[in-house]
Image 1 (cartoon, rainbow, N blue to C red):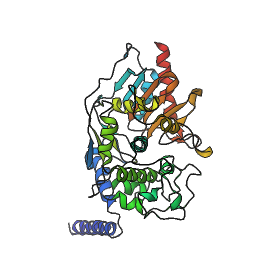
Image 2: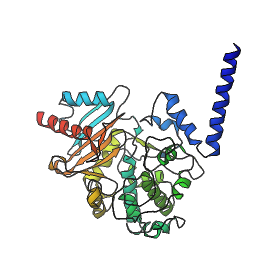
Image 3: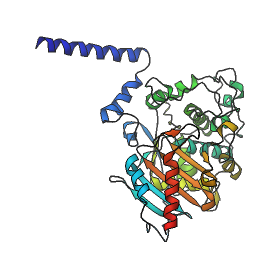
Image 4: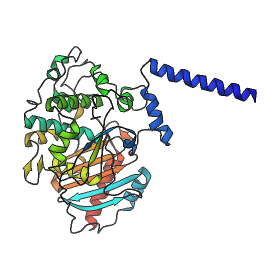
Amino acid sequence: MKWLKKLFTIVALLLLTIIALLFIFDYEYILKGVRVVYFTGHTTAYIDDTKHFDTHTINKGITQDFPLHKDYNKVEPTKKLNFINERLGTVAFLVIKNDSIWYEDYAKGYSSTSLTNSFSMAKSITTALLFKAIDDGYIANLDTPVKKFFPEIKGEFANQLTVGNLSSMSSGLNWNENYISPFSMTAEAYYSTNIQELILGLKVTEKPGKSFKYLSGATQLLAMCIKKAAKRPLANYLSSSFWKPMGMHSNALWQIDGTKNEMEKAYCCVASNARDFGRFGQLWLHNGVWKGKQLIPKALAVKAQSPQFDNGENYGFGLWLSNYKDKKISYMRGILGQYVICIPEDNLIIVRLGHQRDFPNPETNTSKDFTTYIDETYQMLQLH
């Protein structure tokens, strides 16, 4: 038994040493990551993890019923759609045709009111808030310098960085978009308690506005600018600007870093349901119009869905773009296969929420599941 006691002592000392080193070198956020992810039986961030974080509530107003299409759920899903939904753990699949719900299906344990993590679909929502801030006069235009809000931003090209550069992913920031290493900026932003401190430690090391480079840190800095300009929490601004006017079905939650700043994690982490995410897709589909009212300027909504750079032709402002099937498609996208796919020419929106997505194709920046959801939806529409 002595050897067992000795082994236990050695392991305990080793763990205490590791924990101490994490705190000494400012990596204590890793402990929260271990607690939230591995201690709950997962290996990465997951769609139901919001309960482990502090949040701000995005309050709804008077709910506007989502109309059901006259052919609601009259068509069965294709075998291929069933297969991919089961393989990748789809929890919600929704098709909106002509502004009415044409088809919807939910996995066991999930429903039309279930809140799951948006992940990077929140980037599109943050850009919508930027456009609203411009419309409200809080921010002059897309060329407004970031230094107007944060003069402490450093780097050779810091004076040239604009809020538009942040939204179009052409910031030139020295952010490292790494989803694997627990020591990465992305992991620290997700689990740390002071995201603003992390962001303000970045530098603008490349000339902004010249080329596309997808960086979550850019959206986070954009959100910080919007918050400072509007002088209110982003969740409050999102509620008054979109959630209430659009009659969302449910309150939503936006994860915050938990510090005295209570900064929303704007590059990710809005927890909502498929129907309300779909309503946001309708806003993009109709170029900022909701039931006859222009909630965001049309020119900006159109710009968001237009390619900005030769090396990033599949990204606009806060939205991914595609010409799949020779159709002009814009879409919101999250890391685990969260999609709100907008196809204006057919007045069609496809919403998919779930646990996994296929590996992306580095040449197209899309993955096979994205095109499969589109193909099978059109197949279902043809079957009717």
